[in-house]
Image 1 (cartoon, helix red, strand yellow):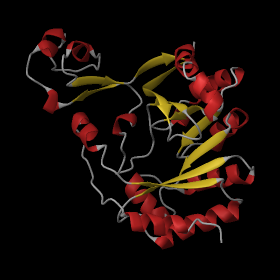
Image 2 (tube, helix red, strand yellow):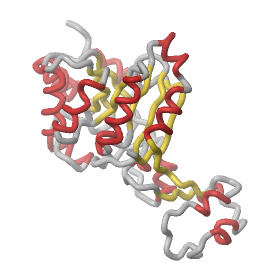
Image 3 (cartoon, rainbow, N blue to C red):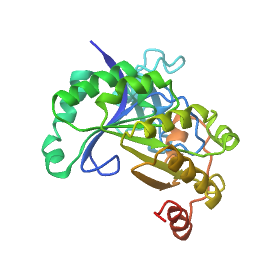
Image 4 (cartoon, rainbow, N blue to C red):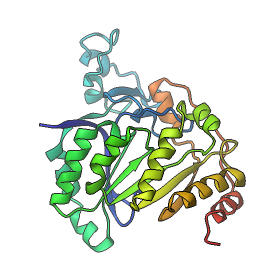
Length: 279
């Protein structure tokens, strides 16, 4: 039975495609965006998060830990007994049936809102067989599907799910290859190549651009992205997502560095969004 690692299933989402949706967040990502607001998604295996500000020092976690927290094996027993959610095990294995059961709970909302299921992450395409099985299951139930991806995977992986995916939510961080590598840890040539293929195949694609102060918040950068999209056949929609620091507490809980950026002003966002307006 196919299984995958998921760190969250969000019901009633309005920000992951059209209508009311169920968003399934899979663990594992091959980018290291410095502004990431879901740093717990990077590692594919389950991992323990510790929120020190919630800890009262009751000692229940120590009592539950077989190794007395000296050599943590990420078993999650401490999280099970913590009365204040100071310790949280992020991610667990789900079967396809378990996920589809969760998705089916929202079917009445899909029908009147034009919604469906969105598979995100992390990078959901790093669990390709699990994702394929979920998309098949949704199709068999008449549930519309969306795949939220950064596109940094082999085209063969994307090609396999094309017949099962109604909409791609495609993240474009930067157009400049050097800037992209500096802030995400990876080159963007594969990402843009895959995007171009999707657009040329006339697939439904919504572009999502995180606007990060001091990184990609210039009209020049947006024009480069706009021109690339037009030359490739055009996307159905372009969304600008302003930077926020919701990843700060999660980084602290994971014991990793948090990199703050400036939040773009409303006037700046309007100026950038205007770049993509029809002429």
